[in-house]
Each structure stands twice: as structure tokens, then as C-alpha cells.
Image (cartoon, rainbow, N blue to C red; front, side, top):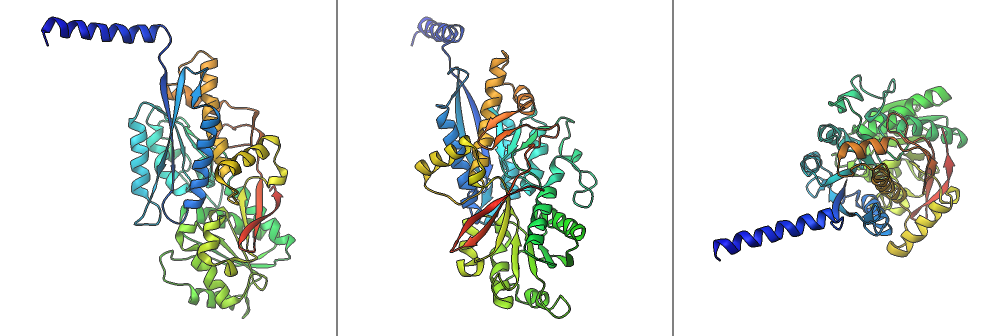
Length: 416
């Protein structure tokens, strides 16, 4: 190609781009990513969240701000086949990749509080890039609670001094009292508490311990178990005689499904019988069809589990509509978290729209962060709610479910 023609072609290309930009016809891409454990035992929970996020983007036509911006959603996996659950190395890799990609304006996740502990500081120094979780319930990520959180929390997660993490779920210091109030209603007078020694497990079981003592329930012991053990038969034998030679009225488990929570259930039934004889109560880390399947439907039958959210019967029109649309696209689900995923994506899209409405630049991460934290009286699938100064949602609702005939059946909505 002659040199003169090469220069002319380049000028035409540049002029064409400038006309497109100045004429307002250029569509700019805004990328939103999620980081959830799509491999291993938590896949049913995480996949339902990702499905709901995609549904919300599709409802928006993959566009924002009157079509000026194209919304691209990418679902990232933070788990590994090697661990069979969320993997610290993978989560760090995801957060680092997001921090370096300027087209990413929101990071949706994580599912596990231990994963959030790693990614929040990375994203905090990248703009900061806002992180919105549909599932992290450990309170120390946003505020301190005596007897539950560590001395340096939550400030250690925000090296820039600016908060960039918000969440759509009520926290474990509130979930613990809900579980205990439910135990009181069930006539439980003594419990043995187990946790998987993970951040979430220790946090929620600690909250149950504190609430149980205040409620007058005897806490026989609070013990961490080895999530890599081959079985828990000896542990269950010990628990079966821990109440002055008898079994406690109930066992409480604070754990994620990936930490052998199904084996705990299985061995509990082997040693102490069904869940009417010695009741079994757990937190949201096991509120999933995957846990029932892994433990065996017969073993899980009758178990009670709490999780953030509202029972279907207590949702408003927007929430009911979400589940109807979700069922049409993906089929019926008993998972508790898809509505949280839907609302999380709604928040990200609302922040983008609010920045545009204020004549701001939605490609600017700080503007999106500010818009998220400014959300008040949001009318969404969960009802009408706001974010407080810490980035926590202002509706402390929890759902209690019970395993019946191999699936979770909603008992009702409860508050602390």
C-alpha cells in the first residue's frame, strides 16, 4: 500500500470514530461481573444467583441510560474442582482481574464471607470498585459486634478509608437470635453448637451461642470440627451423652455445605436418630437442595434451617413477579438466594441510571460506588429498603425452612 493511501485511510478511520462519538451514536460498554462458587457443593445456590442476575440484565434489554450504554454481565467462578468449594486463590485472582479491567464498574459477590474478606481490600484500592454481595452474612465485614467479630474489623478491609462493600442480606448477629427464638418456640432447652471453623461458621454459631445464653437455653458446648475428617461418628457419640449422660435437645450447625456439612448430618442421624428425637438446626450456609442431596433426604428430613430473606407468601408484587419469571426461564426452585441475586443486579443497574440522571459518568467507579451507597427507599423485589452508612440493608428479615419429603418447605418469615 502506498504511504499516502495508508495515511489517508488512517485519517478516514479517525474521522469516522470522532463523528460517531461526537454525534452521540457510540454505545459504551459497562461490564458487571459476579464471583460465585459455581463448582462443587455450593453450585445449586450460586447458579441460582447467577441465573437471577442474568434475568435482571435481560429484563433491562442489556442497556442503560436510554441505550447509551451496553450492559455486559459475566458470571465468574470463584471455586475450584480441587477444593470442591470456593478457593482463596481463585477469589484473589478474580478480584485482581476485576481491579485491573477499567470496563468493570461493579463486582457482585461474593457468596462466602471468607471470600469477601480477601476481595474487599483488593477492590477497595481500585477506584474503589464497588462490591455488592447477595449472600455475605458475617457482620465483621461492615461493623463490629462484641463477642463475634475481630478487634481490627471492619477497618482492616478498607485500606483506602472509603467503604466500597454493600450487601443485600441481614447479618449473622441478627440471624443468631432468630434461630434461638425459633428454638424457644420449639421447646428446646439444651443445645450443642458446632462450627466449621470458617469465618461464616464461627460468626453465626457465635451469635447463636450468645443469644441462647440470653434466652436461658443451656449451651452444653461450642466446638469447632475438622471439615476434612473422614467421618464424625466419634464426635456424635460424645455429643449423644454430653447432657449428663443423655443427648441434648438439639444440635446447631454453623457451616457451609463445602465443609462436610452433609456428613455431619448423616453421622448425627446414625448415632442419635432422626431429627424429631434430637432436633437439628443450621444456618443459611446449608439452606440448599445440594445439602439435602449430599446428606440423604432421609437423614435431612425434619431439619430446620434459617436464611436471610422472606417467605414467598410475605413478598410483595415485585417479589412474586420475580419468582414467576424465574420459574418460566429456569424452572421452579427452593433455593433461598436467587431473589438476592436479582436484587443485587437491580442495585447495580439503579446506580448506573442514577449517575446518568445526575449527568455523571457511569464509567467512573467512584461515581458508581457513591450512587450505590446513596440508595434510599429502593422499591425492589425484597420490598422497600435502604442502605445504611455501613452498606447494610435495612430490612432484617429471615426465612425458616424445614426439610420435608426431600426438599425445603418454608415455615415462615421471622425477625430478631
